[in-house]
Length: 324
Length: 292
Image 1: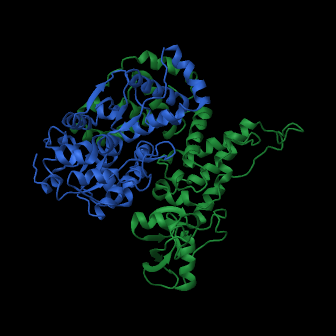
Image 2: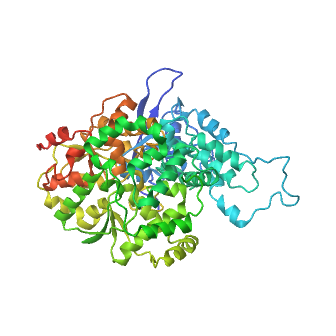
């Protein structure tokens, strides 16, 4: 039975920097079944109403990763997003180019920074010709090892995660979720011989700027779960190298803090992360907060049952790297 | 209803006003808070980065404390909610249990997976109910446009938390409407406050929080409200830094969720700890005809 048609008001971001003129939203209205993908709606608009509408797409099957865009502010593949729920939630469909990348025309963006960040991760197997793998074992891998990178090879490089990421938006030093997920894939590859170097470098190249907001994981059309792979990278970096950076020192300091009292000691944590000198730089702000909230200068109580916490640490965090 | 109260570290320290407001609101709504001085910190996402199994084990211990008392667990912090829920999910994985159960067993602790972790927002909206709250409103917040700010870990990752849409939630706005305020819809309401990197790269963190505050203001908010004390630190305690980072004076009062509910139910600003905020809330209170 054919589906009942819905009226789709599609407000499309239009801009042609080369041709001049200010960015604007142009409304197109069409009748479509609710299951229609947004991409199909846009192609209908282009075919029937405005042939100048510019967008990237190819396979229409969520494989090529070309048609990522903002659909009602969410970074999504247009070919995979039906119009019905969007109309039900918002009454209309606002289509904008991906964020965090400069506009080229209409829905097309310049992906150069996205790909440059990817290249910086050296996303290929690195082997040392002077330390070859034993003959016959060049490609051996246990099922458990394969399991570790079950998710990341599914990535189709659509950049939906990059578009959704508030750290990318705020700081050019952050390589973005996709680049880090790709890095993870080589860090856990037992054939790769640059693991230590990769972990060392990424600690100073943006790893600790991830906000773990998980917006990338929500945006990802292939369930790569980049935020969780970034978490894994952080844990591996700490295990391998300890607290070499502010980010790792903060995580280690927090962990120690809980071991001592079972509760956070806010002041001590700042000292652990910044050191004495760095903390003096924060003192002005600390004083402003202290005037309203004087208890920040007091040591928190030690929880009852702290010896249980200590026992859990002894068993599960026996020889931590970087603890002081 | 009776529930295990997990206040979290910040509400016992710099965010004590959140604890004050929570107790006031729960007393008013007949929610009995059972306290456990044995609860440890949830790890706040940082312990998870340093050692995931340790983090799950610490929270399994917290969950077991509530389970032994036959209670579900109430959080008042998005991050506590996220970490305890994550532990609940991880404790269903056989490989994780194989590592953690023996460690807990040595301490005579066993976790059977029965505890539901509920944030105050969920308890108010689903257990107490929007209509019951609306019926108790004595001072409707009419005239106050409020931008809800959810806090990431209340919503994401959906796979673990999954109670409402991770990018288009509604429960907070429904609650705001029930207490007479006008919710403001803006993109930043589901974005990050910057807190996780506030001590890693402050200038970036401040820029992130400044953008969300400016976004709320540009959409007409007179105030913001958050269910997370970590977001409150970014949005209120460090708002001067956020203003500097985005190059505009923001002057945005930021309430903890139960403070707004408390105001609507008739609490005084002092009972809710409002004088403890760094950004004065008076301009927002003036809109509902209240002066501290």
